[in-house]
Image (cartoon, rainbow, N blue to C red; front, side, top):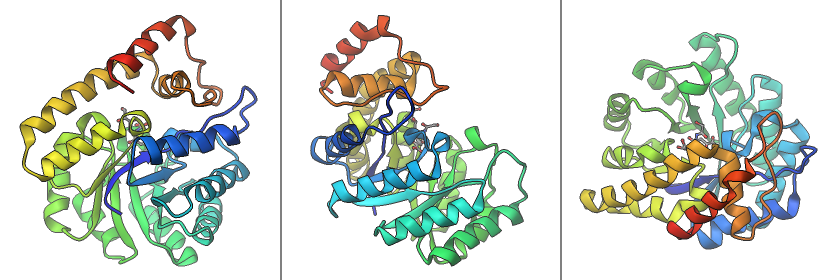
Length: 289
Ligand code: NGF
């Protein structure tokens, strides 16, 4: 369960339906071309929170079929509808996913006791492992070291996807929990997590730039930090442009330019600005994507 995990992109058509063949192509791109160690399915990058329960199940099923046991699979099942989270958790567990993950429940200002109950319920009902998905910038939930400790007491909580720039908290977690899996979540800050001894990383840009992410992680593990910095600098030149042009739309456009039917983003995400297509083509050749 260590290494580079792509937060899988999902291609939609103009009506918001999943493009099955395109999804299979994106899975193959990740496994065969980017050589990722695993896939993080139905996270933010999969536009999960905009999909119906049936669509989420469809994605879980197609990924499991196309993967054929090749790389590790993590199913993000978090939802503020706890019944849905449990149902999705059971579904992914039956499909053989290696672990579940769930975003901290958001929108309502849930107390920590409520958050703990949410994780315990998913674990108890599914009997699967759980990776906490902490992403304070999008959920508004910033957990303290003590709160992580309370969740980590449950042995089924095997780790955290830490999409946060709080590297002091990351260092404290790493020291205190050498046996829990810690995945960094911000691709542009991968090197800082790698220096702090993370086990892996989960990110959207790995769909197109996974090989560089793997190099950064491996070089840091081999104490070759200045070489890792060189790759992070190149990576961030790329990510900076992608963020300016629109994150998921541009990632999909890059995939399309490389011949993959990556579809469009689900509305109300805006369409990709086609006036920028020449610039994206240049990114593909400059960064050898
Ligand atoms: O897309 C986001 C939103 N974050 C991802 C990742 O942390 C979560 C990150 O890779 C994710 O992809 C998922 O749950 O599916 C960024 O896209 C990347 O660092 C660019 O900022 O914050």
